[in-house]
Image: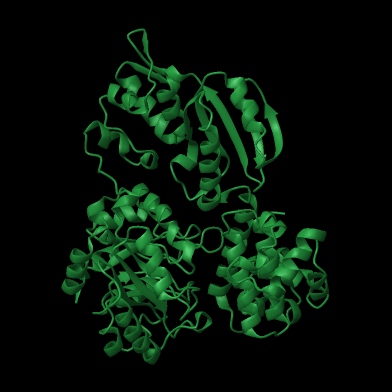
Length: 574
């Protein structure tokens, strides 16, 4: 049973508890545990066998007992008893993005809609819009949610970056323990750091390929070998991700690395350009006037074509080839450039750590500052802070800062942008904060025109510094809301409001194409982790990769500034 399956088990319990009217605190407890399990960097079965389920964030003795029952017996007595109180069709309705337990209960019990197919049929025939308090917009949103659910089921073999990337990193480290392995890399969409990954593809240059393959298939992290040959192997990782390894000739490794990294569109465009120059490109090199040139180094491959080296994240056929030919590719931001994290939650709202614990970890990461940005009162489910609690937190953080040298905690907040575009904290309190993040947390289904006006109104507020997770998407769960991004970027640039690139793997928001567009408008970027527990601070690398896919440079990113320069940016904003 996978982490995702256990997480869905917990999400379903939360939905059923809400349907039968259990307390909101119990519902939220299961949702929080499900979120933690879903994003675990290791197999929950290993954690269970070690007797450490309660060490998972949000998993107490009661939830741990239910997880253990599920893992040991393949089903849970508690879950089965709960299902007797909630029909299966009603549970299925809750899995549609945007259809919560209360709506599912009403549709099922009052309007006798017994499942997803019946709901889709009713919505397509116009019956849903006629139900009181629904209307045409709700009907369209339900249909959109059903399509998203179908898409999610089709793409269920794809995993988020934080699942695939650690698998590849571990396997490459294992291969590099062999002296016969000369080079080894992840390729494909993982090397390009796309949002979701299908298979984990790895290539290596090695002497004695058969020995390397034999070593690889014996690794205990695999649960099944699909095939194993002289130079190739395909296996299923214990996290249910397919892994393919291929051993390649060392003399052709550079051109093969370029070929297997892709994307298909990039490679096709590159070969088409080469044909126009009388060249022929294959995975084994470049043919010029009948002679084949081989490359053991990928950079030399691009140099031979008189191009700048194109970083893997840019290889999507979005103008990178022309820019490389003109030697106008930007020097992309790197993880080492980051000096601080500006979106971090504590135990005061829905986080798990004290500010001092987060500060300690930030300093271990080499950061010079951290912005404490808890939720505000409009997000009651996250125990958001009102004005009085914010003022108390400001006092606490100011006291903590007296203990630090060459490091600073900033007083911030992630303030809700209401449906009308207002901020949910009064102006006087906002003025006392160092950094204000404005985020949309509700009414995601507003029309494009209404959502655009809502965001622009917030961007025009004199105290807002950053627009948090700007498009509101959650990969595989919720689509980005509709908005006129060019108009939003114009206003953001004019008001010097930065756009967040949220590093959380199921957000990665802004998406790459919007990052590139924002930068064209002169908008600054902030790469944050949206940390809710200590290890989330390590997610920064995914946000940096997303920013690189959006062609972002160090100079485009606010939190690459050293502490003194960042303080100056804040004063200038103020």
